[in-house]
Image 1 (cartoon, protein in one colour):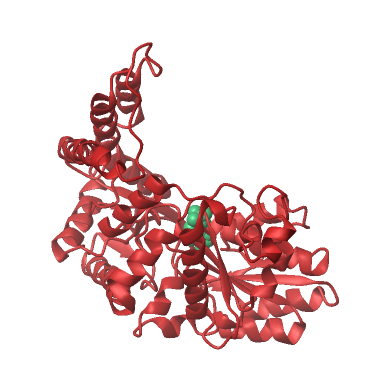
Image 2 (cartoon, rainbow, N blue to C red):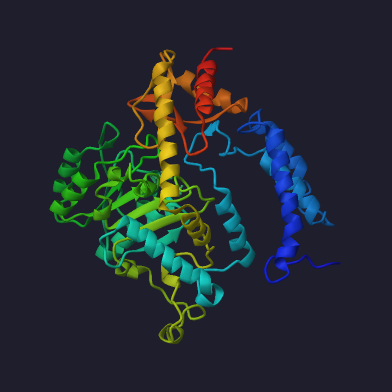
Length: 459
Ligand SMILES: *Cc1c(COP(=O)(O)O)cnc(C)c1O
């Protein structure tokens, strides 16, 4: 029996090359067979097809690398909801850049693990440089900004609450009604009191209501979480006003900029994030408006000493004598132990595109949302919720019931014609188009509008 080749070392690239050719052909074949944003027919036929393809999951004799890759990658690609398709626009589910995916391949091949320096010498140094630079984008005036790499906004929010709890023993979270569900879950996980929810006004935290809530909590340690880009509507809380209220009441502030954070790169739009650097911590998600393959989350802080509560020793990874001898101590940079070098694809993307290249992608995407909103306003059969702030557009067939809106979305999904999300706003259900594809054309936007308008005609 031959032993399968490894991906690393001097022989790795030659072993990978023919396998990659198989994978790339299978990706193309699957996408061609699908012919749209997702396969038609809903879950039942797809589940059946996957089961037939993969059974037996563990055959007695293997099929070999080429057959396994061809068969399963093609089935995987056929059955994908592919965010690169212009009609796939439901969630903050980004179409990754080819260059970032190529970088991720190198991360997989070398497999550095960021829990100790002796598993990740260059990866850990790269992570230190890039996280400091990203944190400095968020906190340009801070002397020692730093950031942790996380699996996404959820983990970043969780760490933010944990750090606040460690500063005070306990902390009362105060958040807006539209806050991401991960904040509430993190409070539950960390054994904190249930968050106090402040009502929203026009989709953002109402400062007067926040003022009242903070007054009522006088004397208790409080962490306010604000949102820069809500998941449902893309709204940005009034950050300078919230920061001022927090300062006046002695409360700490965490800003969840998982969605809106990359506006920092855009000279046209960064003003929307004014006040971001007044937070004790900021969540960013580069697997949204950052075009990274999952996972690429960041938690930025203005001073690296704020991360001290995470420091931890395990004798086999960061014994004190190694640390004293100058080996970087990595264990305090995550709650995970084995950890993928997600920083490589991020670093490659920043270098490849530069600030201007990223700004262009952010602006194109947000401009496309403005164009889509224009089209909705020009289509008498459709209603627009509000002008978009980021790249989310809420629309609905004019005069439709909530049940009809829900049915339109499921109909488009079932037929494999479009993947749109849904959101409740101002008491009604809306179709949600979350645009993240920087290649969208005016024709693509026309098509989306036509699909919604057609989909709402009973058949
Ligand atoms: C997406 C999102 C999150 C969660 O991030 P994950 O990467 O999915 O864990 C948190 N907050 C906001 C505002 C988000 O949009």
